[in-house]
Length: 142
Image 1 (spheres, one colour):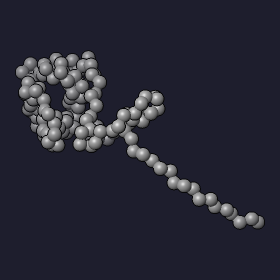
Image 2 (cartoon, helix red, strand yellow):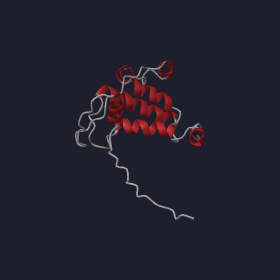
Image 3 (tube, helix red, strand yellow):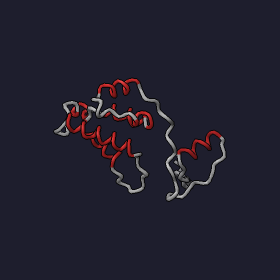
Image 4 (cartoon, one colour):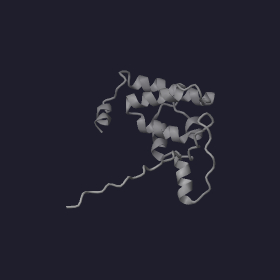
């Protein structure tokens, strides 16, 4: 019986790239030098339309808390709030994240948007004073 022969395999070398750089490389677009982490900015999210279910949800809110500018200027946020509205803990966390800059680097919303978000937050707390809805356990089971 012949003894086994082992060959030395050279380890693969990897270069860390962003998803955008990988996409450009796959599609044949020229790559551009990556900005440093200090100047690296988040790419703009494509404009998401306001969904019909969100319009229905907005119409169901009392007029004094119903946001008007938020769905116009930030339909993606309005859609997300509608989606999380009955998931009490998650909705409160999302509203808090929108209203409080924990990183210290955000520009912030215009004053009218902040007022609308605060009114929604206060109304949400009135609806669900315990901080949990009966539906929370359903979401947690997923």
